[in-house]
Length: 92
Image (cartoon, rainbow, N blue to C red; front, side, top):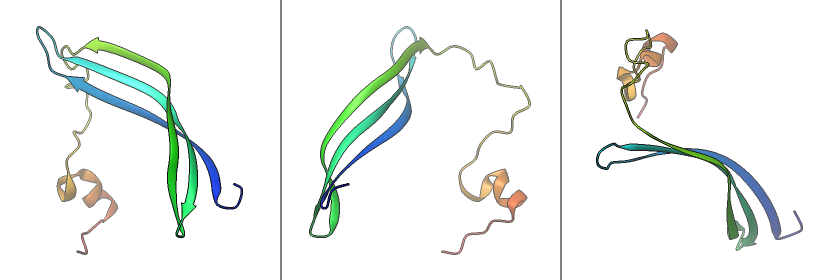
């Protein structure tokens, strides 16, 4: 960081599913953002961004080989097992 200018590097992993014929495809990518930032009116803003691909892979989506393997399926909100197990509650 130098006064009102700074840099940052942020790593990411993304999974994308593309419907298609005859098979749906799952694409995964790992990479990083290389950003330069500037402070404007007291707020930091990205001035320039580069997206660097470290790796990627694509494959057709077949049967879910983990189905029935004893995992608990994720749920959204209070229906998820973590709410009861961890004693969580919503305090809107």
